Image (cartoon, rainbow, N blue to C red; front, top):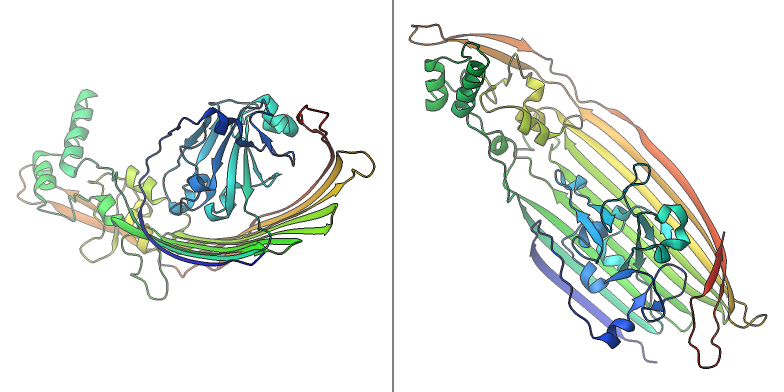
Length: 480
């Protein structure tokens, strides 16, 4: 067969919106009965041959290149799969899944996630390397996995090479991200008026006088009676993501290969991350995937399958793991100014300057995380038909190594607490200023957060026969 050489270069500009919907197109009966049903038994059944409740998502639907991993790519897809997208930082935007509704077993509600038959983290797999995703929903579908499959299972199958072919595919995606549902908070005048009303309902004196309410409304004394929109001061409206991907796929008569290199880089929404010399406080996420899948026909009856995946991931965020959105939702617009008249970060007696979201996003340096993962497995399959027709044996060994290392480069900063006083009858307010906090050097601490090694071994026998005009039934498998 003559080898085919295919070179594909794709440029895509995408707009990603957090909308999720399911659409099921009716299929012709013959086409439906012929659809594959992969439940992880090294045997692909058709729906006509299997009674298991299974839904399959093909790579035409999973290859959503705006998604950072396969979990984000299958949102809203797969009958019986409920997907909930988490919000917040880009690094934390990983979905939660439920198969056939919310179920619990000793507090566990998540389905079993399998990558090429081995339990692994769904966030480590990129959409480009996936061939199809199978949702296993009922007892017949998850019987192979015992109690771990009580909440259903999500089976992810990666791409493999093709005999007598060669192809290269290169893609680059540049994504423009926007905060399309930006929260709106009460302004300082509304907040102060509501505070007075709440105190009056409790039989207490007003917290703010009429002059102070007018100052909040008019902005006459912005350092004493501020009106801060913390969302606009802390975050910008737009961010960007870049994705680079290259795939090599092919094989010869007895050898197949699939190799992929994927890199994703995201810069977040911190408004002014470059106010310091030598470093940035931007909320950043970088992840690189390198996969190699090999299939070797050692002999006509002995086959080997090797899967290798290496993942390097780095995240960076302002301050010492500061949750900026939590601060934005906590500090009211009337609490304190961003800075005082001398340019020092501000705070108050109620909300310390360490709760100042702008100060935390610019003046507290940064915290970094490194994750390094290696996932490897090898499967040997032996046809034993020379002994008993239809008999086969399989042995699989896997090894996973994952570590997480942190670097704490955060630092402290000084802030001032300005306390205004507007006495009754006075034409203007007076105030006192007190310094708090200390300017410190950037931290240099680094250590291993978590480290894990996991070994996997399983083996089994498969038996499949066709007797006369009767088609093949479910193959029997005995696993270890």
